[in-house]
Image 1: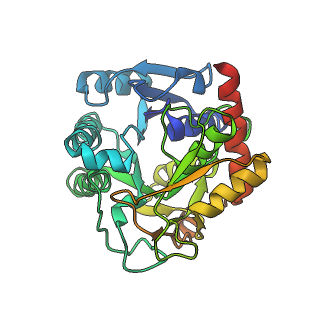
Image 2 (image 1 turned 90 degrees about the vertical axis):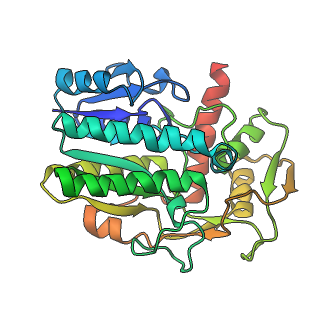
Length: 327
């Protein structure tokens, strides 16, 4: 049996591919390479370039490779872009996901792992956020992901599709061996941006909003190392294969760092001081989002290995330096 990884040549998907290969699994990657890179993948892994909404292609992959589970990562992910291009986000994240889910059901695949997001919570009334917190997305990105969650819930009731919905908080860092990391140009993730400043790819960076009601005026997020997140997906795969029903889980450590604290960590780890400019708030950015982080541990037995901000920065910086050497 094999696992189909959509968006598997991207940042998070490629880390799951590496994790699966280390476990002796057979991952098959479907990616249009619009934001992904073949070189992030192990040489032994099959990469098929194509669209997740191409139902004939998805059917052929499922049949040819005896796919028993689909892990769906392919999506647009930039919150501010979703505000200016909502229809593009609904097309990529919701409409195409509906097509993929239909292919999954039609071709008898019973297990589906979905890459969701803490953006479905919007600006939650309670903190920390638990799986029982009511979703209230404030951006088209968050809404586009929540719609897919609803579709998966309905597909479970109607067709028996067991889905593991993993709501990511702020994913950061890179593979400790620098085999994969965040390689997309013009990425907006905070740690990635700061590392680009350190390596000279950017002259400076901006902080969007310094007047939030937080401990230092900047947004606070729950950062999770991408390698720990990949391990959570493999645990989710085991959970579904063991016959457990689908479930939704938050993927986070349960504590947060502010934007200023992250920037200080990058300066500390790199030994480089750099210019930071403060700009107005961006649309769709809540002041603080932190998870409880406990349910994923109790349900999946998730044990984080890289819950340390300086280590997250260290790995991200090492990968950024590798990118610089490739250019």
